[in-house]
Length: 182
Image (tube, rainbow, N blue to C red; front, side, top):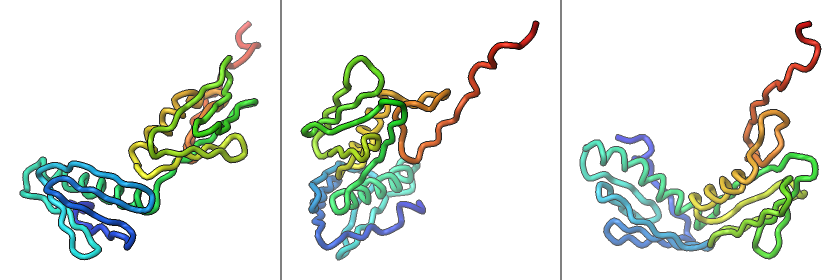
């Protein structure tokens, strides 16, 4: 039995679940999400608890059991609390700002980089160098944060660029300098 798949999912009071065969729809204060799950798993509701059950013990069913449970749990958490991803900008003169809904980055290029958020995602900037990407769909929030980081990933010599808040960038030594062999 999957250690993750057998855990129950607690549904908060303000979240509504709609089950229709393999399709699950979750509606809460932050938004509404729906997903088609694999036919190898089923979702059962028991009061304010959801259980993800697998049909048989085939390899595919075992693989989909834990994945499906995690996807449903992320949907429930997203519509009730939401998700956020924090990014830090490092470099002299590098900064970010929000104009309307768009994120505008000044990160050493000859032009500003504008990033438009997808549906359900908001940007916030703290102290010109800290960007917060928030929303109710974990997958979309993570992909948007990865796209922002890809504009100028951290380089290994000086560490300049955009990185996740908890990311550790391994630094390289650089050139040895003059005065080697004579």
